[in-house]
Every structure is written in structure tokens, then in C-alpha cells.
Length: 260
Length: 221
Ligand SMILES: Nc1ncnc2c1ncn2[C@@H]1O[C@H](COP(=O)(O)OP(=O)(O)OP(=O)(O)O)[C@@H](O)[C@H]1O
Ligand SMILES: [Mg+2]
Image (cartoon, rainbow over all chains, first blue to last red; front, top):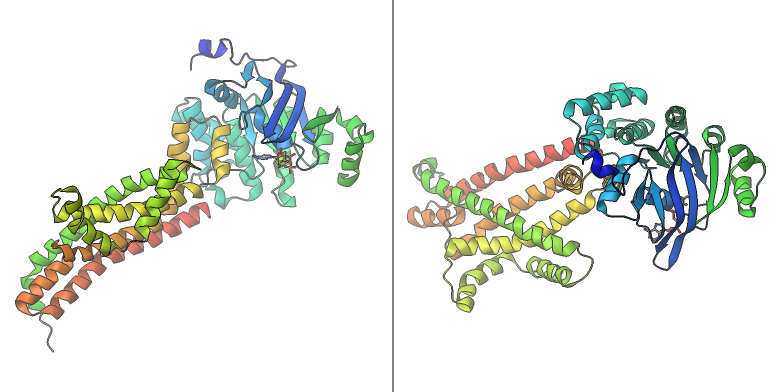
């Protein structure tokens, strides 16, 4: 893939600090007759950290999964760094290279060592050489604090360590946006902090992040904005100070009273 | 009752010849079974449509037919129906591969479905091209999952070659009974082939067990 091809009509255009990098316009998602996302519109700027909260089934995961093309779009559009979705296979591939994703259940490749987990995508999707990919893997594992585990297999690591590997694996593609879908929900309490610390460091480094989470402390501290999603809509979009002090929606108040 | 080891030693080239026939028919049938199985498995993985129904019917038919019936049918009936001369070795391979294909299809299907969806999703999210997803993310753990079943099938196939004596294929049973009727040393020859079967199959089972343990240690599932 040459730069010129990528920069053509529908390609990554290198948004700068403060520019919008994820744009959603009236995004609709249906599963059969059921509307999971009902005309969702929002905008995320480079370097922003947006936390998404809300009741189960509200469409949070679906929303994240649409931003990197894991779910098709039934209406409206999503623009990621100049790449328009819905689009062709190439567009989806390009978006996925710009957007990293971290799952609740880690989803590491269990038959591969940590190192192999980290070098596979850069070598096959970015065309990196082995040496370069190895260096990058080592550097990223240092960064998430488990440089000494590089030749282990995921099953030999704790849940917290596995999730940090998953974060490093996504970062190895050098994405411009990171999506997190309840990254700490599957972890034992004593391991939640080590993962949140890594995410906090990532936010401070200027990464654009969309985080679905139940960790209200994290949202309050790290998020620039908090979105409240229910029934397939974004009902509230507010900075954390306001989001947690004065509810502007009845369901938000209800949700907050349960969770705080 | 005496056991004459010398008579076994005297006829060991014939016995080894029988073992060789059993082994190569097993090997060729394994390859053909895999090919048939892969095609049937792809049909079976479709959610609906003619291919799916055809594949299911194939599996049901051949799993419900005793191998021995299949072997005899292919040898005696198939040539009459289609007016072709296939030869006993050809018939042996056709019968075993048709039967094996049904088993291999199910083994493949279990292997592919055993790869957690989440891992495929993560690979997609990373933007890994589909070719590499299949080769690096789906196939290796699928093979790991299938190994015990595959080795089990291989030993079943080898044991099934003993039925081919019925259509005159010179495998171990055929050789042992021929030598037996010639020398009346039935006990010696049937014991000898029991040992030969064991020596081929036992290492396979040990290998399968080790491979499974290694996989479990690594992936923990
Ligand atoms: N593949 C699918 N097929 C059918 N319905 C689906 C599918 N995926 C999600 N849904 C439905 O869409 C709605 C939104 O699901 P989603 O997983 O996005 O919710 P969520 O906000 O992430 O909930 P949770 O907090 O439980 O993870 C739910 O009602 C769910 O049942
Ligand atoms: Mg969810």
C-alpha cells in the first residue's frame, strides 16, 4: 500500500491535535427488526479520552465495534481520520490499521508466545520486518510493565498481565485511536489497577481513546467527556465533573444512583 | 503346544510385505479421506442450502454403514453398476476413503469450531489479512484440537485394513491366513501379526497423548 493510494479520495489524512478523528453521523445498526443503534451522532477529537457508560444492552459494545468495522453500518456514516464507512474492504482494512481494540476477554492468540502475539499484525498488516517488529514488541512490553514475560505463553500469565499484552498488541499497529470494551470487567479486583494505570499512561501520552467501562473512578479522573448510552442512543454527553454531579436525564440519574 | 519362532523368522519377508500393504493403503486412504472430508466439511459448515444437506446426508450414510459392507459393496457391486474394472486395491482405497471422508469431515468441523470466535475477531480488529488469519490464527489451534481425533482415526483406518482380506488384498490378515494354511502354524502367524499391529499403533497413541499434553500445558484449553 503506497502513501499516495492511501491519501486518495478515501484515506487516512493525518488529523492533528484537536482535529476531529472519529465522526459519527446518524449511525444506525439493526439486528433483524431490533434497532441496536438509533441515529447516533458524535465526534471525538485527537487526544480526547471519551468514556462510555450505561445500562446493559444499551448498545455500547455495538457502537465501538462499528467504529473499526467489526459490525456493518445500516445507516448514516462513520469517518475515521478521513476514511469513510461504510466502504469497501480496503476502507475497512485501512480503518482497522488506524484503530486498535481491546476486549473484555483479552482474546489473545493462546497458541502463540507473547512475542508472536505482538509481531503478527505489524508483520502481516503493516509489512514490518522481523527485526523492527521484535524491537517494537520489546519496547511496548516494557511500556506496559511486563518486558520480562515476552517469551511466555498467555496461559502462563495472570489476567491483568494478559490484558496488558492485549493492549501492547493493539499498540504495536501504532493506531491513532484505541477502543476499550470493558477492559477490566473480567479481572480480579487486585488486577484492575495495573490495567487502569497502563490506560492512564496511554491517555497522558496523548492517545485518542474511547473506553466503555464501569470504572467510574477512572472515568471521573481520566475522561474528557462521558457519554451515557441507553436504548441505542447517546442520551448525555458531558464532562465528568458535570456528568457525575448533575444528572440531566432521568435514566442517567437512575443509572448513577445504582452505580455510585 | 509348541510355539515355533523359527517359522516366523523364515516367513518374515511375507509378513513385512503384508504390513507394508496395510501401511500404504492406510496412508493413501488417509490422504483421500482428508480431501473428501475437507469438501464435505465445507458443505457442512454452510448454514443452509443444498450443499449443507448433501454433506449431512453423506455423513449420515457412511457413518451408518459398517466398513465391511462398504468394502464388499464397492468390490462386488460398484463394477456391475458402472461397468468398470477397478481392481481390489482401487476398491480398497475407494471404500476406506468414502468411509474415512465422513469421519474426517466431522473432525475438521470440530477443529474449526473449536477456535474461539474472540481470537478471530481480535485478528480482524488488528487488520490482519484474511489469508494470515486462516494460516496463523485458525489452522494451528484447530490442528492442535484435532490431533487426538486424527491419530485415533489413523489407527481405526489401519485396523480397518484388516477387513480387506475379504476382497483378497494381501494385507496382514490375508498373509497370516495364507501362511497358516500352508504351514499349519496358525498360532505363530496370528501372534506375529498381532505384535506387528501393536508395534505400529502403540507409538501413535503415545505420540498423540504427548502432543495433547504439550498443547494443554501451552494453551490451557
Ligand atoms: N450479533 C447480534 N445479534 C443480535 N442482537 C445483538 C447482537 N449484538 C448485540 N445485539 C443486541 O444489541 C443490543 C446492544 O448490545 P450491546 O452488546 O452493544 O450492549 P452493551 O451496551 O455493550 O451491553 P453490556 O453492558 O451488557 O455489554 C442488545 O440488546 C443486544 O442483545
Ligand atoms: Mg458490551
